[in-house]
Amino acid sequence: MKTVEAKHLIKTYRNGEVKALNDLSLDVEEGTVLGVLGPNGAGKTTTVRILATLLKPDSGSATVAGIDVIKNPEKVREVIGLSGQYAAVDETLTGWDNLVMFGRLYHLGRQKSVDRANELLERFDLTEAAKRPITTYSGGMRRRLDLAASLIVSPKVLFLDEPTTGLDPRGRQDMWSVIQELVTGGVTVLLTTQYLEEADQLADDIAVIDRGTVIARGTSDALKTQVGGEKLEITVENVDLAKTQEIVTRVSGHAAHVETRTVSAPVGNGSRDLMEALRALDDAKIHPLDIGLRRPSLDDVFLSLTGHVAEEVNEEAVTPKKGRKK
Amino acid sequence: MNHAISDALVITKRQLLQLSRVPEVLIFSTIQPVMFVLLFRYVFGGSIDSGQPGGYVQLLMPGIFVQTVAFTLVATAAGLAEDMKKGLIDRFRSLPISRGAVVIGRTLGDALLNILVLAIMGITGYVVGWRPTSGIFQITLAFLFLFMFGYALSWIGIFVGLSIKDARTVQNVGFIVTFPLTFLSNAFAPTTGMPRVLQYFAEWNPVSSMVAACRQLFGVENQFGATANSWPSQNPLETSLIYMVLLMLIFIPLSIRKYKNTSA
Image (cartoon, rainbow over all chains, first blue to last red; front, side, top):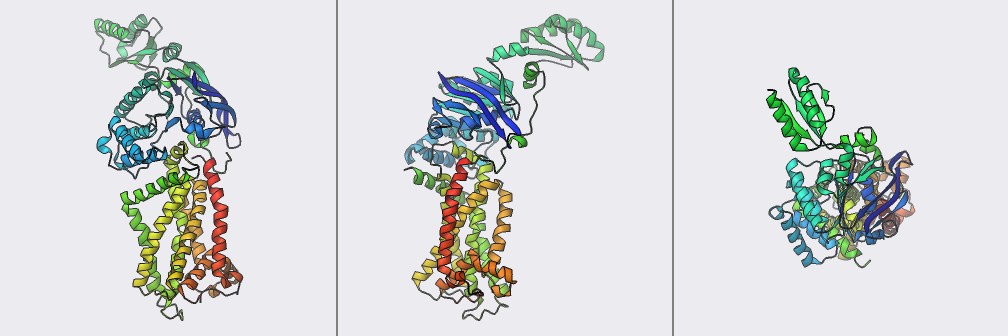
């Protein structure tokens, strides 16, 4: 069953000058995670805002848990959780205050709201900080609290809009494990991200979007095959360049690419190829300045799918301006 | 619908919690009006010959009361704009709560704050010589008028906050609008000294009507108004009521509709 389904969504700003969504269609199977991957301004946030009933599309239709988001937004709000790019909580209040307030707004009643707040704080490792104002929280703690707030009534569908953007690597890891745990619980998730690695870690299925429309759809493996998987990259002194190029070409089976002092080529077996290259370099008495496997980045995905690098559209231009109707 | 009121009260409670967590806000929102009372009382009070038994402070206090509640417009607008910027309004809008709850809750919260501010100002006024001479019923009615006026303006604040969306701009725009409104009135000085055009404006300015109404209810002769013998200056209580009802009739539905259709 499709738990989320969007069909031919079109959304323009400034009387059609800026096309945020251009015939975007996607769906999420029940109990799975769809990663929506794209650069800034590709339409990720607009898509989430439409599905979460915050924005009406110019045309097209969408359902969440079988409910029409345009005709029946009130019912949709009862089954969704939304966690945005910035922690949408009251910063002057404590974490506990916030969760109890949201519990009350979900009509849980006083005691149940308190119990649920304590439970979620415990689960997200925030019990110690529960009675401190959010202003004292780290970026990662804020995101976890924000996520907790979207889980008060165990939503059927969870929208996570760039849940780790702006977090340090540690905060990102923490957030990933929290999300993975949720997914095991069976909730359907639509997650947007700018990082291929994140989609790879968390999503069953990935939709790549560019300029307001889906340009590729598939599992992470399928996408990677299409993109060309990992790359072996070795940086050496100039004198060793020729020999290194020869080694890399042999290991990879593809012609190695040389740029200044770095030799690179796609590899199929990641670490095994890396080891082989290392051994060959050692035999040739070459000491690499740097050696490693590079996972394909969003740029690589875009380059191979569209032939152009991910273009960042100025967010300002996409932000709805005042005076706009609906 | 049955949740509309309880939802709004949760939002109001949040605002009161904010005040308890960040008491500075409360302190500064009361210091400013107290400062105005003292400044006007001692800077202008000595040089303006009010011809009023009890002195300038009798005329001044109603003026400052009205000015202070008028600034509720700015407070409401800035608070709401801040919530929009922080993404909090988006979160509220994604919850299954009544559509009007968030804005109703905020206007109630600001109204409650006004009660406290008015009480502190009243006490300060008393300390510096303000002595209303009417009865307890009329004094209560005056404060009720002030409370309602602040509440009505709060709804304009909602509309302004949702339209401008940036707390700092809202502050600036708010002051640019409310300062002339409160000074182009009979609040602090006689309107007779103003150029003719401004006199007419002052005459029909809701602030003037409110100040005149409060002076009447506190038992002071309104020597700063009534230059043109216009209907508002003759019937300040009725005019004020009409203004308040009109403002609410226009801005409550307008603001709630704006909230429903808005997106940060």
